[in-house]
Amino acid sequence: MRIILYTGKGGVGKTTVAAATACKIAREGKKVLVMSTDQAHSLSDSMNVRLGKDPVKIQENLYGLEVDTIYEGEKSWGNLKSYMREMLTIKGRGGIEVEELLVFPGLEELFSMFKIMEMAESGVYDVIIVDCAPTGETLSLLKYPEKFSDMLEKILPMKRKSLKVAGPAVEKIMKIPMPEESVFDDIEYLMDKMERLQKLMLNHDIVSMRIVTTPEKIVIQETKRNFTCLHLFNYNVDAIIINRIYSKEAMEGYFQKWVNMQEEGLQEIKECFSEVPKFYLELQKGEICSLEDLQRTGEMLFLDQDPFRILFKEEIYKVSLLEGEKKLTILLPFADKGELELKQSGRELVLAVKNEVRRFPLPVTLQDNEIKGAKYKAPYLTIQF
Image 1 (cartoon, one colour):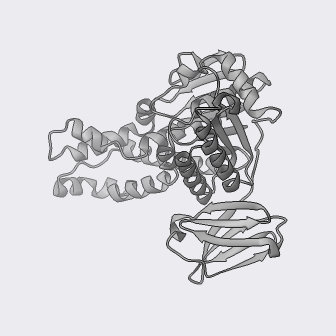
Image 2 (tube, rainbow, N blue to C red):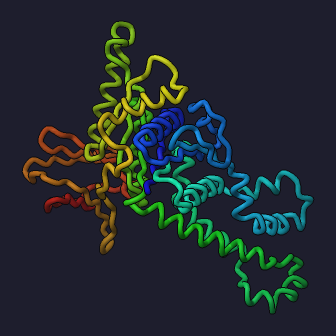
Image 3 (spheres, rainbow, N blue to C red):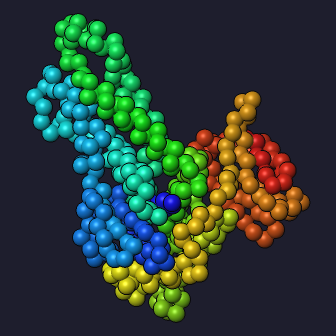
């Protein structure tokens, strides 16, 4: 099966692109589930169908749902949450403040990811298309399993077996309630789910990330940061979707300056994501708000390409630390050493190969470092900092 996640800055059209992809794949005969993890759900509006926390049949081979994070949260850690609430209200009176403290940053996104895993493990669908929350919220889940594990270990350092012996004494001396068996069951349940989630998300034969962007400079900058972050965490980005491209014929005259700025943005996207497949979608004449519109949009976007396939799977670049020296290794197949030009421009590397220019946004760990040297040994360029 396949899992395809669409991410990007808020307002770039992730929901429309995700729904259009789902319609195209479903029409080709595969059983598709399209789901939204964004708290401000708009998938129902896009598909003109009322969706809920359980899959709803939209048409032949196509199903949809909008994740209810409150419901998923209670299902995943209800007992543990009750115990933590009890701990936090020992000295206080409870109330809305306690409930707010129990909503940890990224937790809702994590429960949304658990729902994706649940649907994947059910084996019911050939492909799951995910309309993710805006970039920042989506990226917050990347390190969350590790962070949440550390938090649980600090808050609940006691072990199940030792608690049975020492629990009553600790409770009496420290004046804090000891967790019930069900709390430990929740912890083990969460740890197991997070381990399975990480294993699934890093399976490049199943999971693809696709970034949706528009040709505006501000959006492109966030797209580049998003791309770098996803690659650093070993997530497979197999396509860039460029949405809302203005038709030159429609923009002649008064709006010509917008066309020129868009051309600059499209060129920057070409330079920054040269290896990754790119798909272009023009701004449509009207709103896309029906299944027929979505089906037509999916055909226009992918043309003769099959969006079900993994469209790209290469490690473009990686950062390493060897003997105290930081290195950035870049994949450059078929390059001629004599035609390579490299320079550092602010927080970006600018790499020219013949007439092609490629920009690499530097990872945070390298942004304050200067280039010491570079070496090309096909097909990799290694840069020392």
